[in-house]
Amino acid sequence: MKCVQHRIPCLLSCLVLALALLGFVPGTARAAYILSPNSAPVNVRVNPGVDQGLLRTAKTGTEVTVLEPGDEWTKILIGGQEGYVLTDYLTETDPLSDDPVDDGKRYVISPNSAPVNVRREPSTSSESIMQVVTGTEVEVIEPGDEWTEIEVDGEDGYILTDFLSEEDPYAPENEDDSIRYVRSPNSAPVNFREQPSTRGKLIAQLVTGTEVTLLDETGEWSRVMLGDQMGYIFTEYLTRTQQTTYTSAVYAYVVSPNGGDVRVRYGAGTTYHVMTTVQPGTEVQVLAVQSGWARVRFDDKEGYIDVNYLSISEGF
Image 1 (spheres, rainbow, N blue to C red):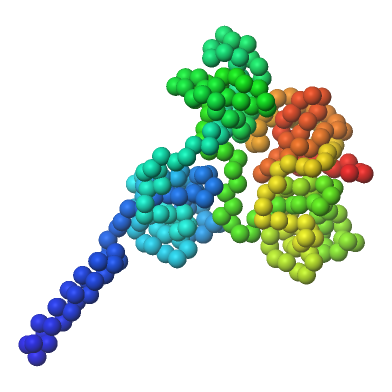
Image 2 (cartoon, helix red, strand yellow):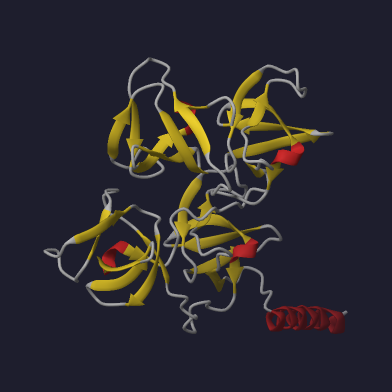
């Protein structure tokens, strides 16, 4: 009996030692790093699940402490807060430990959502060649501490370095597998109906790139959510890949539920400054759709309008 009593602690000690060698010590936290597959910030959530509250975001290379690893979600400690992140977005090696290859691409970031000047010379007193909005992709020719020489739309110029970022602010972060994007094979608008039938009441016509949430598929039809509106779209007109450019022109008319003028903004969101307003009935060319906002062209201007204020014109 005495021998057995001595052997049990021995066996437990051996087991703990073996687990330690494998890196699985119960209750022992370990360091890890955020690794985003598309360089966009990664969501850290209050509880495990893409529908749970957002605690904060974290960039690639951010060091965290793993509290409870999991197959899909891992509980972490970040900045003194506990939260959950998709396990696929964690790595044990620092992704920024070695200098990555710089492809020279940068994206414009405006601190106040206003357009940013690209100047002919590196000085605020120099002539402005053009103005670019947040999210515009540029090519770095010569970086600098205060000014960076860039190429944009075939022209060389200078922009304040503080207004450039390596990360695309509009890069899609599709961690939810239910996200789909409308894709039209001929650039024509796609019908969004109340019932899964070509005779179903038409709710709206959606342009290529419109984001929807897939609820389920029933044969050739898919039941989706567009904002808070549920309806049906042909399954073949949905894709997992976001497309924000068009092979041919798509036009729409501005509509207003109260008959008032509609705001055109410098960027895709209500936080961006208002560029101008347009009257209901104004025809615009739709250049792209992004997160519920359409980038449109009218009167030699380009800006963003909430897609709820656009109606696709007949014949396109």
